[in-house]
Image 1 (cartoon, rainbow, N blue to C red):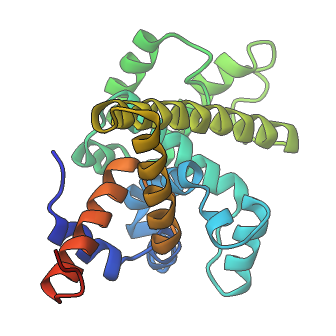
Image 2: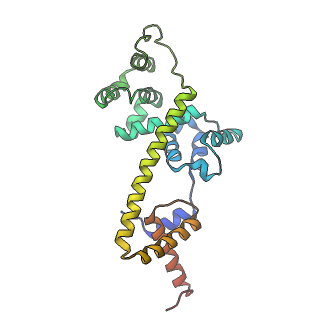
Image 3: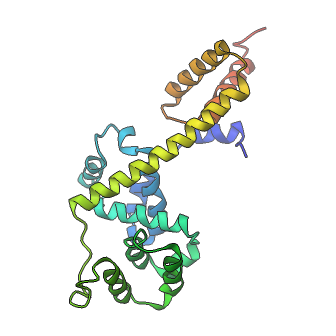
Length: 240
């Protein structure tokens, strides 16, 4: 359901951007792990580091650390992957709090190595397993040839692993953008009857995008334009 223009205006005029949300949660990381999962995932999707004029996520996080908001790149991706697990298996906050972030993190490492039924079975058992037991199960799956000798082995993420995570999230973003483009095309189909009208709408949407400073979808930008039109009309700045 579309939000009201008033609600959209409130979000636009008094937003709390993703970086501020991240900084707030990092102020008490232990108590905010549920929120950090979704915030970090959204930062990946929205490419928040580009919005803040950084060349990479790593550079963005280093700058946050320099100002006292410490989060390692590997930890950041842990939050992202746990959120993907939360979405995929519809994990509720109450279950998250019962299971704990660290157990879910261990499961997120193997989610692409085993089938969904096995993951679902493991998730159902998590409240009754220790982190050490879950690590053992994880290592048996990831390193079957050496799991017996390395039951307590810490899972380390190499630079190659991080690049693979970045590639995976780029694919996710491409899929997201593809959906947005499809919605964009449907928008024109519904509102434009010829090419000239489509060009007019395109120009108006691009202006609205510049004014908002965000890459919002067509529906939001259309409502934003309507809100501005109503404002100027009520101020009698537009006349018949």
